[in-house]
Length: 487
Ligand code: NAD
Image 1 (cartoon, rainbow, N blue to C red):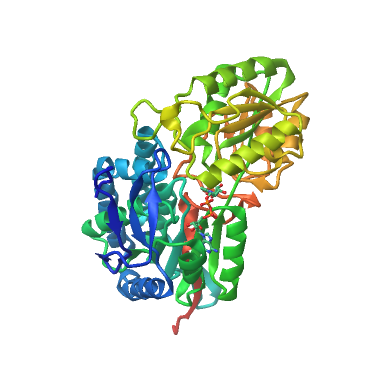
Image 2: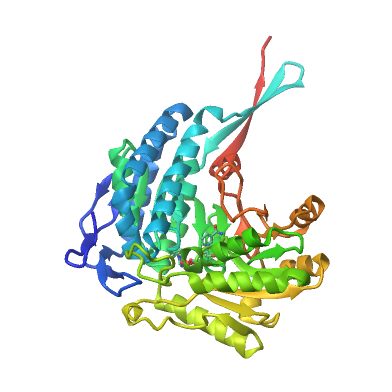
């Protein structure tokens, strides 16, 4: 399946191992960089979602009875097949999401790697045994799958955010119904075919594209869904959490963020400035974990600001499918409008634009949702760039007088997802890591997520963990069993 200007796609939902034909109720998917039609896809409604959940529930009866090692073998085969199809999937992801070829390659390899990571844990899962609860009495703590998992995913990283859920869910014996974002269904639908061809039994992984308010809510409220694994914005996550509470469902919420980075006077400033630039502008700034607020200690502020501004100005903005593009378009008109409001209000409040600050003037980019890499110096503390999540290529920078001020301002945010500190001093680094209220701190390191480490936010950034062996706890339930020996 590939999307070119001359051949647009037509896709239905994926249920019970079968890619169904397109239905009359469809959405058009357009390329964010060119405005061209990529294809049309079925909008799943209540009946389709019900069929997908029932298929998953049925498939779960056999899937949950496999041993971990057997499921691990199948997930491993899925990861290998995914990896073998990366080159095929890249143009599809670029076309529907807008990101650059390089970013699509990185995303897809990473998503396959995450599946492989969970396949690799298959022989390490342990339950607990408690000896001598009383004379002749022992206890066991069993780990059981939850059942049908609803995996609801946004459009910024359609495949990695899916595989963060799919890997642990499948390994633990759950089955999955995924709802991709309504604007990025195609890569996920093709992936479902690839994984099924690789040996995933029918019904174990189903895909229902459609609107969040229809397909998403039908899934969250379906009585057979036992866990909702949601990644998306904070307002939607809070609504999903409230809906899921009705059926006492398990929920993990991976929500928005506004990650601070602190650069100290003794830092390697070249590497720190690169990390800030990469952390802010990667994926056109549309990442949950991203450098969204930069605090620099006074003595080195000018040097850092100059380096970050130079990097922003050098980035080549372009259509994702053009090989030279380093930063693609925003994903939608709405995203660009929101970013434009956030920057203009922050500048009106007193922030100074040091780079970018508007749309690029290249006529070749006029049909896409482009925005130039932007740096704004010291917008007010109550401005949108300080308080809201900025989901686009615009970085605010503030000078701070000392580490106390840096930590206090970094923590003064509704969000608590990631953070970073650059310093040459171990004690400073450890203090920052201990005191920042969030789920991840990178010390002198670019913002890279490791499958080995648990990841999840605090405050308005949600709750629950993905990645790490900890993720398995969010896809299993424990059950206590007491055994009284008769002897
Ligand atoms: P969104 O909340 O609008 O949509 C996310 C998903 O939820 C989509 O599939 C959407 O269709 C669905 N949805 C929308 N309304 C729904 C409803 N009422 N019921 C059920 N599902 C519904 O988010 P977005 O704007 O598409 O994505 C960007 C957001 O995602 C940003 O805030 C970003 O920070 C966040 N994000 C968080 C993480 C993380 O791991 N913390 C990772 C990536 C993105």
